[in-house]
Image (cartoon, rainbow, N blue to C red; front, top):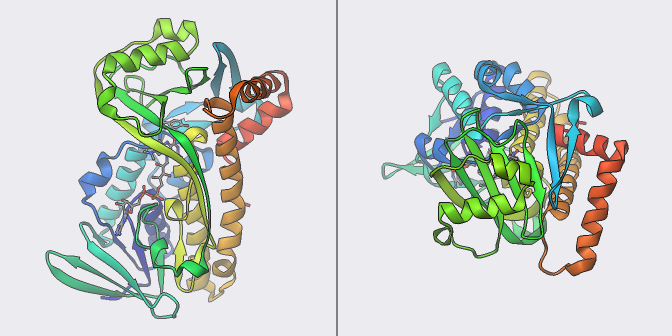
Amino acid sequence: MRTQVAIIGAGPAGLMLGRLLQQAGIDNVILERKSADYVLSRIRAGVLEQGTADLLHKVGVGERVQAEGLPHDGIEMCFDGDLQRIDFTARVGRHVTVYGQTEVTRDLMDARQASGVETVYEADDVALHDIDSDHPHVTWRKDGVTQTLDCDFIAGCDGFHGVSRASVPERALALFDRHYPFGWLGILVEKPPVSEELIYAHHERGFALCSMRSLTRSRYYVQVPEGEKVENWSDDRFWDELRARINPEAAERLQTGPSIEKSIAPLRSFVAEPLRFGSLFLAGDAAHIVPPTGAKGLNLAISDVAMLGAALAEFYGERSKAGLDTYSKRALARIWKAERFSWWMTSLLHTFPETGAFGRRIQRADFDYLCGSVAAQTSLAENYTGLSLD
Ligand code: RFL
Ligand code: PHB
């Protein structure tokens, strides 16, 4: 088998890149380790930057996000019960859209299937070969049979635990990593959200987030210590903890019910540099991880492939390597800004076992500064709604 671009991974990065390439007339095949149903069952991100929603429209899959996505003009920040709204529209004239990652993935998968472009699901033992040459190839096993795909380029869109980054020789990558000593326990519940907008709450008991998937389905998170087990959290314990951490008016309004999903996600910051090794390009979680506090992971995956897709289109359309040669540098410049913002939101809103009373006073000062400064609110709004691609 032969294609122009082999894409590893059918998450949002791989599927969006596939769509962009298809629209530019570039042949591509996606190889995904899991089944389509499994990919769609992962509950993850919920907030789309304006640029992400715009790109869904641009590539012709914007119908559902337009009809079902919830435009949000701001967020509520809460510190020990005190509330401050950050008004995105007033500060930067932009908004975000609440629309689940699962739905983004479904829209892209449906469009891909309808257009007949090849995706191989349940591809076992995907392996990358000759990535330091102009003639790489990929092998995998399906139903016990080994298959080979020759290509010009490989796009590693296979997430943090994928095979692509692991195929680059160790000496060729610099890794930057920050570990946080806590995770997020999240639940999904078939109840209307507690508030029209998301509430990000700092409390001495720990961080809490009130989010949503629709007007009838809510997503809530609480910070839990590293190593905590989901089995230790009955629904009742979760609701009591959430109520204790958010502002009293919201706690009073909160509608609880049986959880339909409950899981713990670890938090980390991570960047691998550079994003190119020979004919392999890394994009999305394969190259970087942000803690979810800034709602940036999915959006960064999409902005990476927007740049990579344009660079590949330039290569095939104009025979220019300029975009491919600068992809890593351009994407990393934006990635590090999102890393900084996600780290800052995490630092402001979580309790850190080691920082003590001084650290808490600094966090309070950071929150008070945000409340009193239009410049600080503008900075938050600019980053949260998404920086431009350049
Ligand atoms: P994905 O989504 O992990 O997709 C990678 C795909 O590659 C496949 N794969 C392989 N395929 C073939 N061979 C192999 N060897 C393979 N190894 C892996 C996998 O099965 C998978 O299908 O990466 P991608 O496309 O880069 O997308 C990144 C996003 O999924 C991620 O950044 C976000 O979910 C992060 N995130 C959030 N991002 C936001 O922008 N806004 C949010 O509100 C937000 N909330 C979150 C989040 C992530 C969370 N968790 C669980 C980590 C909330 C949570 C709780
Ligand atoms: C979510 O709804 O899952 C969500 C929203 C905002 C975040 C993280 C996760 O910052």
